[in-house]
Image (spheres, helix red, strand yellow):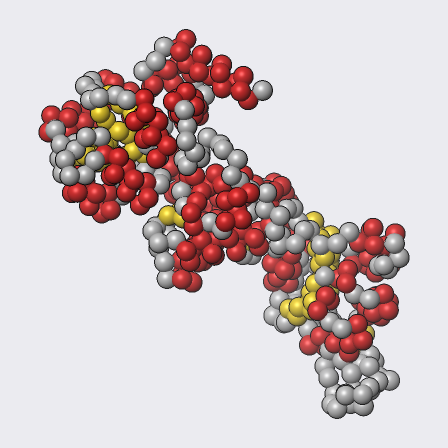
Length: 457
C-alpha cells in the first residue's frame, strides 16, 4: 500500500423523505467521502452547481421539481456526474428513459444499507480512480513534454531519443510524416539542441514561392540582377548564418533549384544572383515534407543525391492514429493553453466527448486536434467540453452507436447490457465482483454477457 489517502469524493443525496437521507448517510459514511443531503430539489440543484458532486442520488418523485427534470439539469450542467435515480414505483419505461437521459443506475425503494453500499461501491471507486488519473495526468503531461512536444507513446519516445542524440551534431536532417504531425516543432527542437541555438531558425516554405524567385529568396541577389531588382537582397541562407534553416515542403522545390541547393549544402557557400563573388556560410539544414521522396526520385521529380545528403539523419513522425495513447496528454496540453488564451477555466472533457475523440480517425493529425479543441474551448459555456461543443463534422463521423452514447433511445435489455459492461470494466473484468455489485446472480450475469458476446461476433 502506498499510504496515500483516497481522493475525496462528494456524494449528494436529494430526496424529500428525511428517512431516505438518513439511510444514505449511514450506508455511505466513510473516510474520503463527503455526503451532502437535502429534501429540497431546488436547493439540491444549487448544491450541484456549488459543489460539483461526483455522484448524485436522486429521488424520482418530488414536489415542485421532479427527479427527471433535475436529472436533465444535472447532465446538461456536467455530463460526467454519475446520477443514480431512486423510486418507490419501478417502471420499465421510466428506467429506459432515465438511462437515455444519462442516469447510470436506477434503484427501487426500499433500499437496504447493504444494497446501497454494494451498488455504489463501483461508482465510488470509479470516482476515486478518475481523481487519481487527473492528478497523474497533470504530472505526466509535464514529464512527457520534450522541447514543447508532448508524447509518451513508444513512437514519440523514439523520436525524442533521436533528437537528443543527433541534435548537438547534425548538419542536415530530414523530417517526414503526414500533414499536421508536428514537423516544425521537431525542427525547432533540433535547432535548440544544436551548436547554432543562439542564432536564427529561419523557416522557408517551398510551396509558397514562385518558381522564378526560388534562387533569389534562398541565396539573395544584387541590385540590377534582373528586372525589378532595385537593391541588394539578403537570401534566407545568409539570414540564417550561424543558425539553422528549415526548408518546409522540400518536395515542392523545382529540380533546377535542387541542384543549386545540393551544392550549397555540400560546400557551405552561396552566390547571390547576379554576383560573381562567393560567400562562406555556416548553416544547418533541416528539410521537411509529407511527400514520398523515394517515389518522387523514381519519377525523376526529386534529385537522388540531394535526398541522400538531406537524409543523413531522418526522423519519421507518426500519425495521431498511430499514437492514440498520447491523445489524453495532448488534450490536457491544449486545454491548458486555451484556458490561458481565452481566459477560461475549463476543467476537462466529459467521458462521452472523450469517447467521440478516441473513435475519430484524425486525418489532420495533431494540428486538427488542436483546432478542434480551440473551437470547443471557445464554444463551451460550462467547465467541461461535451459532445455538443465539438464540431459537427466530428460528431457525424463518430455517430455509430457505442457504449458511451447517451443520446440513443435504448431498449431495457440494451440499457441493462451496457450498464453491466460498464460495471464489469470498472471492476477490472472480475465477474464475481460485478455480479455482487449489480445484485444479480452469476448465472444472470453470464446470460447478459453471453448475449453481449454473441452480438459482437
